[in-house]
Structure formats: C-alpha cells, structure tokens
Length: 400
Image (cartoon, rainbow, N blue to C red; front, side):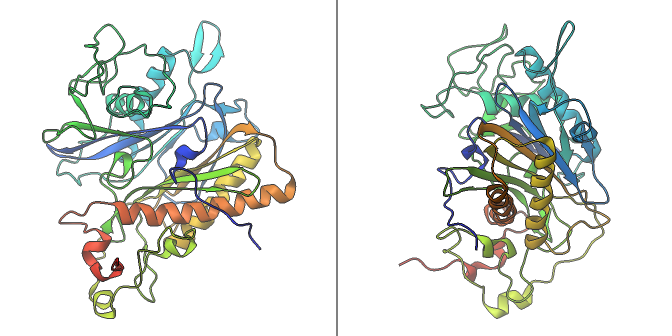
C-alpha cells in the first residue's frame, strides 16, 4: 500500500527546494516553439537519464552513465526545435559559465548541461524557426530573474553577470529598474517580455517557476491530436521527502483513456487535484477522431527529489518515470518518439533506506503521469491542435 501523499506548495517541480525553472518561447513570425531550463542548486544536482523512444534528440546523456566521471549537472534543458533546438543548451551553458557555475578545470569551469528535444518543426509555419542559444539564455534569465514583476518575495537574489534578457538588470548593457521593458540584454537580437507584459507577434515571451501549458518547450507541442504542453506535479511523502516531475508532452500516442476519453494520467491524481473533471458525454467522446498524420513526436521531462541519491539511483528514478509516462500516453516509446526522462537529486535530505526509496520511486511514476495530464489540461488550443476542454467541454464539472 502506498503512503498517503499530498502535493507540495505549488504542485510543481519548484517544490523540490533549490531547483529553479524558466521558460522562453516565440509564437508568430514563423515560430511556435520554445525552451525550458531547470537550474540545479549552486553545488549542482546528481543526475541520471533513461531514454526509451526510438528517435531521441539528446545532449550529454552518456555523461550520466554511473560509470562515467561527472556526478552532478548544473542545469537540464528541454527544448523544441528537434536536433536544431539542442543549441539552446549553449546559451544556458554560457550563462552558467559567466556566473562561475560548472565542473572545475584548469583555467575555469565547464557547466554540465544535458538536454533533450521534442519535434515541433514547422508548427509555426517556418521549418527552421527554432530555438537557439539566445532563447536558451532567455529561459535561463527567466529562471534567475529577481525583478518585482515575476519574483516572489521569498526568492533569493541571484548573481547577475550578463544582462538579463527579461528585465535588463545586470551586466554592462543593463537598463536597470527591474521593469519588464523587453530589453534584449545579451540574449539575442530580439526583445524578451515577461508573461504579464503584452508582446508583439513573434517576440520572445518568458515565464518562470510553476508556469504550465503552452509555454517554453511545450509551446508547439501536440499530444495525440490535442494541444500538448508543459505539465508539472509534486508529492510530499509522510517523512517530508519531496518528489516532483515536469513533462513536455508532444506524444504520438493518445493521452485519453480509450473507454471514456478522460485524461489517462488524471486517474493518478492526488485528492482534489482533478476533481473538477469527470468523463465527457459519450457523444463528445465518439466524435473525437483526430487525423493520424505521420509525424515525429516525443515526450521529455524531469523527475526530481530532495533526497540524496547516487547516479545509478537517479537513473532508476528516471526509469520509473517512464512507467508513469506509459500509464498516461498510449502507445508510448514508439519508433517516432524520442521519449527521454532525466532524474535529479538535490541531496538536501539524507539518503533513503531501501523501503523509503521504493516510496520515492512509486511517487515519481505517479507524479509523471499527473504532469502529463496537467500539460494537456493547461495547454492553449489552436486551429490545428484544440485544447482538451475545447473538444470535451462536458468534462468540466459544473461548480455549485
């Protein structure tokens, strides 16, 4: 029997203390794509990875093999753009190096930044309108930005070496003032805008923290014909340990229960999490028959805990997250998916006993299922990929 769990304060990956999340995306001008970055604590995070899809696009995954040298990573990048989008990690790496974060070597540091990508090429109209290093830098800036427009009062200040692409603070090119004015900083030739600032067509828009839906790497995502996106969920175990997941859902398979068109991942929700949903009417369920056009896809993500784990245990954490993926998406791990999950441990709490580690693994699988459902539920519909509640409006339970 699984222990009684509750969601963390934000029900997101941010509930694992020390992790920071930033998103940057572009929509318009040929673009519909973006990048998400998860920053580790200052000392890095122990990491593992599990790749199950047959068409992965990844960077630095071999380094996470327990037999290999480096124990900790400094960030993980999830991005659109297929293999082109892997260059977003270069912008994050540059920002980290400027801040002095990385693996120490003679003469400086080398930031360790694994990455994985989804296939969203052409979904904004232009095939090569893809994330690059500047968009990765903007996502990093969103994760670290401390300007009043996006930062909770409890957030700790971050060393600003380069000019922030979000608010312009820090660096020689900064305008100061901490206002979301769309200052380009050093992130690229285009301005970036906070989530609360109206942005012109094709501009870079940045979100931070627990943002979900059509943001960051999930901006151009499609999930079984529906709009996909970024989803996230967390669980706090009875002993206080936290486990959380972030998923970028861009699946070839269906995210629906074939029996009643409910979100398959929602069945693993914590009490109250998906209580506002119920099965749609049989007519709505029967009417949904999306075109099965050939496509490359991929669901990627991160599962993390504040427990102290080894690289091998982080690899196992990532592996069981794939169980959660397969519960929420059917089929999963296909020949046209590059399904990849990273496992992170911040090591803020002691190493678990064997039975406690089992509980962490079980919570991780469920959290990933919940994150998949959250991504689809939060995504914004568009003509070629409608939102779940646009297709199944009766699934939303009437509130008294």
